[in-house]
Every structure is written in structure tokens, then in C-alpha cells.
Amino acid sequence: MNTPTLADLPHVLDPAVVSGLAERLVTVANATQTSMTTVHDRWNVLGDTEVFHVTGAEGVPRMLDRPRDDAQSFAESLIAARNALYEAASSELPDLRSRREELASRIGTVVADYTSAEEAKAMADSTYWSTRSSGTDPDVAADAALGRSSAGTTLRKAQDALDTLRDDIDRLRRDIEDSEDRLASRLRGVSGGTEVYAAGGEPLRVSHTFWGFVENAYPGAPAAASTSRTLAEQLTYELARAAERRIDWLATADEDSVKRWMDAHPDFVQAVAFVDPHRAGDLFADLASTSTAASNGEWNAGPLAQLLALAPLVVGNLNGIPAPQRGMFNRSGLAQALARDDLDDETRTRLEQLRAVIEQRGADFGDVDDADQITTLTHGIRTDLGSLNEWARGSADLQSALTSELERTGQDKKTAVVLVMDWDSGGVLSVREIDRPDAGASRLSQTWQGLHTVNPDAQLNAGAHSLGTTMTGQALSDNPGLVSHVWFFGSAGVTPQTGDELAAQIRSGQTELFSTHADDDNIAEWGRKDWLGSAHAVDPRDIPGVERFGSNGGVVPGYGSPRGEYGESTDSHDAHNSVKDEIVGWTVGPDGSPMPIIEETEKFGYLDPSAESFKHFVVGLRDALNSTGAP
Image (cartoon, rainbow, N blue to C red; front, side, top):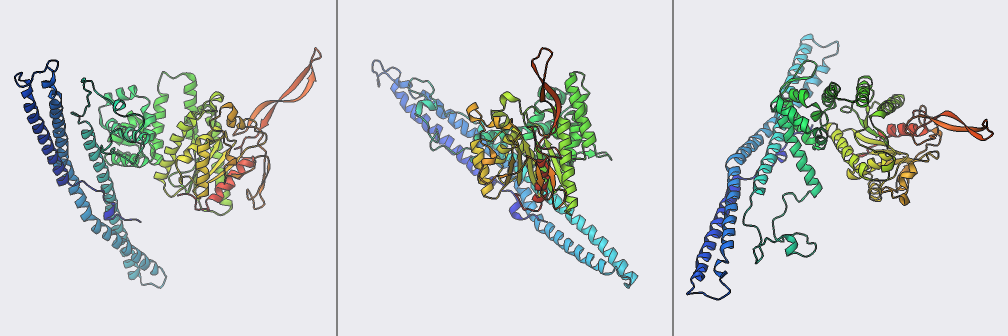
């Protein structure tokens, strides 16, 4: 077990340095204002007509009025900045520094106690097991058992102290970040004396003072607060931090205020999915530390109890917290939705189907928090809650077949399948565009990051169908090294940039990508037609390093037995089996004209358990557990 070191302690700004900077600002402010006032007073001599009188230049004596006012405003802004720095240096930073010093003094003792207890427990275990033979003196055996029990108690206490130390270090890190954010926010709010004016008095903007593009509109100015983030990343960061603060408020505000705010902001439950999973986990742990749960595990007091009662989906949609907790909050949110009296029949039916799937198949997908391998599975176009039953059945079939294969081959491994349906894949008219896959990729990225945060040792894999391959490809390119193995079925294509990035990941060994397209699937290729304006015209099978696998019917080696098993041909674009009207012949109508004979025909989908492509998928996942893969 990794133990904390001094290097794990976050840095705290030295209050003396911050105070010194604050005093320097005061010195600059005083000097600026004094110098400008002196110059202005001397310039005012020009106001004496006996000293200066030029027809047409009557305004000259007032030319320094604005600079004087600007200098005063600038000096006031420096004082405001000084006050913000001084407040931090005199109140927050000393406390944070004191906490850091206290943690530094604890690390050595706590780690030493844990190491000693761990060694003592190992020795006590060894002694205990050495006395288990029949010839051992009973008193010696009893003493060994007592010693083992005592060593276990001591180790548990040392472990608790170590966990507490880790929690305190994490809490200090968050408090330092919050303190720095507050200081930065106060400093960003400081303004004055920084406007630029033309000779006529009108304010100038950057477009007036620079032609064309420049690297920095204000050369020589201080760098941005975060030079390591792009504008999009900074915006995401700020929105996530705002979401965290709002969750804190929702957990403690009065009931009526929470209900009013949630009614006014129904989309907030979706926004919380973009909170950084590590921070979401820390936030949940903080809320849990001041909450209590009943014997059945449900929160009945404290901030989590309030969120469970008033805003359950706010917690249920957080990535980075344990799956059982997410399940508890999401079930509560679903129950609240079904209790509403303003649902239309279609929405109510779909929500009831969702509840039935959760109740009937909840255990069929595996335990993501304890799995050695986690596989996400996602859909293509024209898929929503109306298709939940077939996709839930397909996900359960995958988990069942994979579990059977692991048992048959003697692999003591645990797997889980995560069905991803929280993205809008649209319909036929939008299949050529990239906006929906891009939006879905952002959500899938957060899902992957959350799974990895809670279960960092699990191997992450992915399977995707149709336009879902476009979306998954985008997410893969955004998260190099996170997902080990990926399978694409009937792909609608990926963008050229994504294709290049996936090829680079394959070359570096960060991921392995497999792709198939059945000969009888005459739909998927239309998503890749560049002459129709497709934004994702690259067939993933053509990406260097991608391995093709079969879906036209054939034996899958290693499935079901060492010799393998035959898999059916996929004869449609569907992911699962379907029944379609098909012309099977012709006849003559009453008027003598030809008439088609139409019969309902079962079609095999890519992910039907009898399909060749499905069996390749299962064998691939089984074998992937024997590889190192991505972290």
C-alpha cells in the first residue's frame, strides 16, 4: 500500500511573501498618485492667462485632468488589490500553512506506526499458523491466537489513522485550491485606471491599437491565471467548480429554496456529469462524512439525506462515486419522476420500462466497482429509451456469455458491462453530421474517467455500433491510453483527424481497435459517403493497425470449445435480431399484374448471441484480460 510522504503535501503560499507584495502595491499606488498630482498642479499654471494664452488652445490647461483622474483610479485599484492580498495573508494562508505543518509532523509517525503494525501483524500471522499443528501446546496456541488478534486490532487502528491522514491531506489540497480561487476571483474583480483613450476622449479598444492577429493583445502583460488550459478547458473547469458549489448549497439550504431552484434549473442534473470525477468523489466523501445512513444503507440524516430527498439525480449523475450510491440516488430520482402527474403516456411508459429493467436486470451487468474488466457498450441512430429493453438484453447477453467463457477456460476474473445511452444519436437526417457524436463523446469521456476513478485497476474496453462508433472514436481520441480494446460494428465512420489520432494510439500500443462490416449491411456505408457531405467519411477498417473481424458467418476459434463454434451471418445493419418484411417471390394478381410475396423474415444483428461478430467480441474480451493493455 502506498503511504503518504512530504511530497504529497500541497504547497501553501508564504503569508509573508503575499504581505510583502501587498505593501509594494501600496508603495506603487502612493508614488503614482503623488507624482501625477504634482505634475497636474504644475501643469495648472497654464491656466493663468498671463502665463499661457494662445487663441484656439484654450483647452490645453485641462489636458492632464483625465490622466490625473486615471492615476487616482489606478492607485485605488492597487489599494483594492492590496486589501485582497492582505486579507488572504492575514487570515486564510496562516491557517492553511499551520495545517500543512501539522500534517507534515504527523506523516512520519503515522506511516511508521502503520509500517510497524503491518510487520507485527505479518509476524503474528506467521506465529499463529505455525501453532496450528496438533502437537502444539494449547497454551502456546492460545497465546499465538491472542497475539494475532491484538496485532490485527493494532493494524486496523493504524490503517484508520493512515486513512484519516490521507483524507486530511486531500481536504487541505481542496481548501488551498478554494482559497487560491477566491483570491484570484477577488483580484479579477479589481479594475480602474486601465482604460486607453484617444485624443478626443473616446475609449480605445484592441482593434484600434493592433492590426491583425497578435499572440498577446497586451504585450508584456502578466500571463493568464491558467496557462495550461485551453479556453474550452477553462470554461469546463469553471462550470464544474460552479456545479460543485451549487451541490454544496443544495445539500444544506432550506427545503423550499432547493425545490424552487431545481424547478427553475431542470438541466442542472445533466451538467453535474461534467464535474471532474476525482473532485466529485472527494465532494461525495465530504458530504458523507457529515451524513448518517439507516441500516439498509439509505441516507436518513445530513446533507446526503437532503439531496436524496430533494435532488437525487444531482448525485446520481456524478461520475467518480461508487456505483451502489449512484444507483440509490438514481432510483430515488426515477421514483420521483414517476410520481409526477404531468407525464404524458409515452414518457410514463418508457420510465416504467426503465424501472423494470433496473429491477429485473440490475445484477445482470456485473459489479463495475469490483470488476477486473469493464466494457462500455453504446448504440447508433434512432435509439432512445424505447429501445432500452433490447439493448439491456443485449448487454446482459454479453456479460453472461463472457462469464461463461471465463469459467470454461478457468479464468478467475470478474467483468462488468456498462450500457451507455445518455447521448442523443438523432435520426437518419443527422447521421452525416458530427455535432451529436461530439456531444456524446464528451459524456462518454466523463463516464470512462468516472469508472477509472472508482476502479483504477480495472481494464477499460468499449464496444460500439453504427454512429456510436463515430462517437466512441471521438472519445478515444480525447483520452489516449485510457481504453485498452475497442470493437466497432457496422461503423458510420470517423473523422480524418480521429482516424490519425487512433492510428497513433495503435502504433504506440495504447489501444487495440477491431472493426467489422457485414456484406449484407447496406446501411452503415451511407454514413461514410463524403460525396453526401459526411463529416466522418473514414472507414475505421482502413485505419493503419486496425484488425478486421468477421460478421459474414463462420467458425469463431476458441468460442465454446478449443475447436470453436459457428456464428451466424449478420444480414442487416441492426445491432440485435429483428423481424423485417421481405420479398420472397412473385405471384400474379387478380388483374394479371405481378405482385410481390412478402413474408416476415428474422434478421441477425451484429450483437445477437448467435452471430459470428458477437462471438468474436466475447473471445476478444476474454483474451484481453490476459493482456496488459492500457492503464
